[in-house]
Amino acid sequence: MKFKHTFHVFVDNFSVTYKQLLYRLVISLIAAGLYAAVVVPMVKGLTGSAEYLSLTEGIKSFFKNLVEGRPSELGGNTEQIKTAFKGLLEFIAGKTSNIALGVLGILLVQFIKKFFDGIGNYTTAAVINDKMALRAQSPFSVTLIHNLKPAALYSLIYVPINLVYSIICYAGMFYIIFVLMSFLFLPLRIFLYIVFMVVAVSFKMVFTTDWLPAIIRGKSGQRNAFVYTFKRKGKQTLNVLSNYIVLVLLIFSLNVAAVLCTFGAGALLTIPSSYVILVCFEFVNYYDREELKYFIDKKTIIKPEKEKPLTREEFFRGDSD
Image (cartoon, rainbow, N blue to C red; front, top):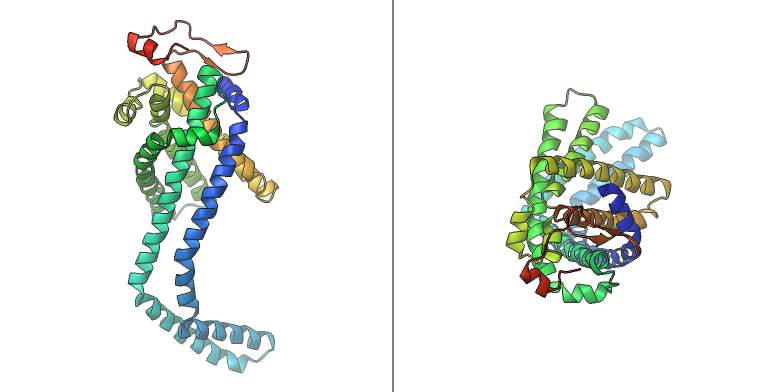
C-alpha cells in the first residue's frame, strides 16, 4: 500500500517537480561558474606549459608522419613524446600544492552545491507535507524563505554525513570489486558494483527516511529527529528497505532511459521527479508509522485502523488535522 499511496501523493504534488527543476537549474548554473573559476586557471597553467606544447606537437608529428608514410621520422617523434611526457610529469609534480588547492576548491564547491540542494529538498518536503496534512497550496519560494533556518541546519548536518558515507561505501567497494576481484569478468564486476550501489543507497535511506518528516510534521528538533529515525523495529526496517530497493532501481532505470533515449532532455524531468517521489515515500511511511491520517488527493483521506490520540500539546499546537 505504501507504493500505491506514494504514487498518488506524487501525482497530487507533481507541480513541485517543476519548482525543483527550476531551483536545481539555478543552483547548478551557479555551481558551474564556481567550478570554472577553480578548474580553468589550473587547465590553462597546464596547457600553456612548454612541456605540454612539446607533447602535443610530438603527437601531431607522429600521426602526420605515420599517415604520410615516413617511418624514418617516427623514431624522432617517439623520443620527443617520451621526453615531453616525462617533463610534463615533473612539471605537474612541482605544482602539487596548486593541485591540492584546486582539489579542495572543487570539493568545497561540491559541498556548497549539495548544501543548497538539501535546502531545496527540505522546502519540497515542507510543501508536500502541507498538501498531505491540510490540502494547503504552499508557494515554493515563500516556504523556502520561511523554513530557511531549519533547512540550512538540516542540510549542514546531512550533507557531511552523506558525503562521508558515500566515499567510504563507493570507494571501498570499488577497490574490492575492481582491484581485489580483478580476476572476474568485467561485465560481472560492473554488475556487482551497481548492485552494491543500489543496496548502499537504499540502506542509507532506510536510516534517514524519518528525519525530515520528524522535523517538519513531528515538530521535533534536529537531534530528536535524528535519534527518532533510527528507532524502528526489525520487521519495519526490512519492509522499508525492500521498498527503497525497488524505488532506487526504478529511479535509476528511468534516469538512464531518459538520458539514452532522449539524449539527456528527459533527465530534466526525471531527475527532479526522483527527489520528489522519494520525499513522498518518506512522508507516507512516516504518516503510516505514526498512525496519522493524510490526503493522497483532493477527495481521498487515508486513515489508520486506529487513530493515534492527540496529546494536549499537539492539540493546541495545531496538529489536530
